[in-house]
Amino acid sequence: METLLTTDPEVAAAFIRRGGVVAFPTETVYGLGANVFDETAVAKIFEAKQRPADNPLIAHVGHLEQIGELAVEVTDPARKLIDAFFPGPLTVVLRKAERVPLIATAGLETIGIRMPRNDLARRFLAACETPVVAPSANISGRPSPTTWHAVFEDLNGRVDCILQGEATEIGLESTVVDCTGEVPIVLRSGAIGIEEIRTAVAGAEIFSGVMSDAAASPGMRHKHYSPRARVALVDDAAECGREIHAAFIGLDGGGANFDKVEICTSVEEYARRLFAFFRECDAEGIEVIFCQKAVETGIGRALMDRLRRAAED
Ligand code: AMP
Ligand code: MG
Image (cartoon, rainbow, N blue to C red; front, side, top):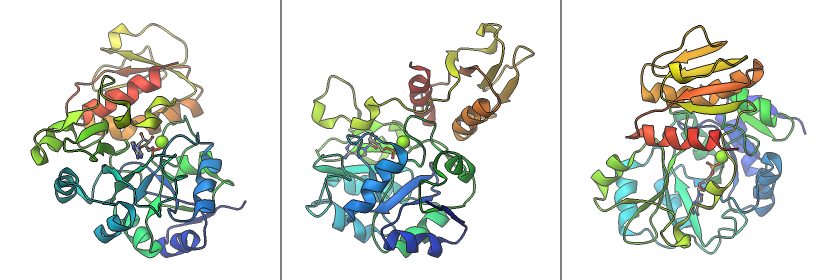
């Protein structure tokens, strides 16, 4: 398959309207989209990414009215979170409308819905004239793509089109919140931290394994965010062993022990740079990536979640 590269959201959207799959930028990471109501097109996403069929997709809307095409009911907590955070890096999980095909939700009766705030994403989604389901635009298991070059590296020849935008502003995936019940439950942490969620709905909780399985976010079981290099979490640079072909990323430290070092000036910058740094390390033949732990408030919680998953075998 030939992959068209374009900066024109209208050109990219035309592929979606014809049943194609298109990678596009958002403020979180690049997504790989298809028309949610076209089962054949949605199947192409799973094939292109080699994504396990039990990992559900998030539906992206360009207008708030499209939520009514996807969900049977917008619950009270969902309404509050939508009012507070749409458009933005937040996904609400609601009971799905009948016409949403089960392939999009990996067999679940619920669907994740998000309205991106990135300008190019919004122009693209408006031109698609339908909600677009999109997981991250990487081969499954690899770090999510934060530049169109990273999308190209994984998916050139496997998708119809790549909409070329800037490097993403946030760099980690959206906060996912189950809003099917009275108490919203954070299933996946993201840029919008629990502290912020609670300003909109005071009783919101974070999912813990002891809650009912019904609330679990299925895709979180799968291996994620992994560079080829080994990832090791450390408190500071002094703790790192002397290894050949080693890299360090964090908020302070560094030193001569490393072949590659990135010191970030804030936890936001650390989050924004992490996945691109992983990919650069792989391209440069790094074997061990030492990652400094961050304080788990705000986006720091999401950053630590991704770091822990990347460090798992
Ligand atoms: P990705 O778009 O690659 O970041 O993956 C989407 C992730 O969002 C999934 O792996 C799940 O963790 C979560 N998700 C999407 N839809 C649902 C849903 N209906 N219920 C619970 N979690 C969901
Ligand atoms: Mg993903």
